[in-house]
Length: 293
Image (cartoon, rainbow, N blue to C red; front, side, top):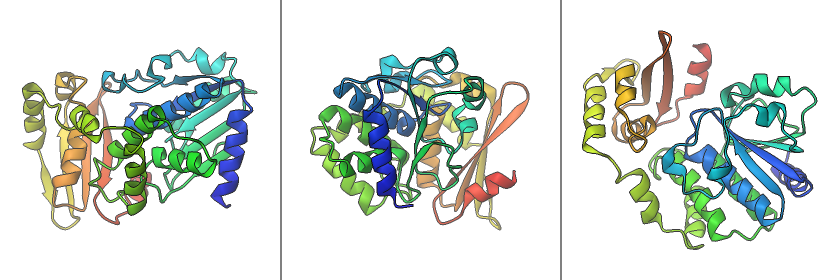
């Protein structure tokens, strides 16, 4: 389906609602939060009540985003909320967002709009705005605003550039395209200082945090046959990370500097389980491998 029809459907749904709840995926990153904050800011500028939900708290490093203060982790926001539209951002399915059971519990819940850029998206929304060629969900939302003639304020630009900047690993990973750079350029012209984001996400590492990085990098292994680099993160490593030294910063650093087709991070989580996270620097379809596992 032509994405322009999805744009129009989503615009009509947003502007026709009275109260909107955005949903960001669990362990929220800059893309899911930046895209959600942009939707919240857009709605509020139109006099529409809007807030955010996430299973996990918003990290302190994203507190500067407009609307960040409205986020709640209270599941009753979904199961017993009085919103008339649910907007899910940057989640290929409701399980990844952490709300599948909550949405089921709500039974006859409100209609749902999904904004995403993952090719694996299941199309679970009543309206699905999905562009697998975009660098980020924030870029999808940017193109949505642009197509619908929305005047992008500085506040909106801050939200959207945060998502594009972080999900392209600071304009270094394969998702970085001429379209994403063009979008970023236009957002910067709205008054956003790229240096502010650089200071927040790159020039923010503490000595203690870098020592933890050292422990994790000392475990790096490389499989020459498969072209896969891997390392392990133990529970004690995670405990030693501060809010400003999050795991995704290390993942972005490794995926942007390692001479390997694929990066696999194995992370020990409570309960004796291990979570695996793939990153690719080429054309390898890691989502297909992840599904097999």
